[in-house]
Image (tube, rainbow, N blue to C red; front, side, top):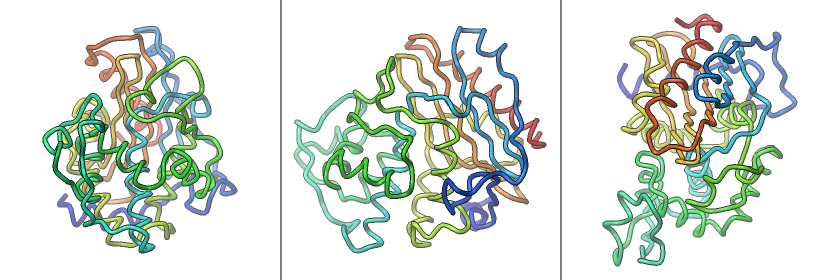
Length: 291
């Protein structure tokens, strides 16, 4: 499937229980459950899964998880929405300073003392999960209060916004957490068929970044049936979270929205956690009839 087909396919998605119409929209059929308890026992972790297509399949979908860098999908959407409203120019250049630097700066690290456009910062944030780029975008939009208000503006009263990168990757309390079901609802509000949140050109930009990211080869991409395309955003922390959210697009038919959060043990080696996450998504897809 080429990129143009992927982008056109987004407009065909039907989201059971996660309509862009908002939280009042409820599932037309009861949500199915996939038992992932054996996978959780493997490392002593906790999985949160929400798969939404023709059917909805979940596991711990109403529990809170630290979302880590998966929020960057929505941050880019918020900036693009501002651009659609004429509140910001995507080609506006922003200075990058040494004071902006925090861990994981694959793009901004080379731009210290120079400038990057808002569009370049968005691209770096989504495709390479550049942390200083995300912090700069939040600063430029007005800070954490403005960023938090964006979620509330789309009807999300669940997602917590408390810290910048990399502090938001901490675990142990409800700061910077959300639920799988809320994330699926938010993805529908950004990329659902009836969503008017983004202009077509902005939606295409976001989908391009989500499909062209090289990250997460062993997560949603590994779980997707053969021939499917994945548009997604990962999130990871050595404190235990291994996450991935996005759209899975079959060669034909409706896209499937997938939210996968895994809170595992503290580690700097993510291979086992990624394998658990991918297997959890594969099982959920099978229950949903996609195998």
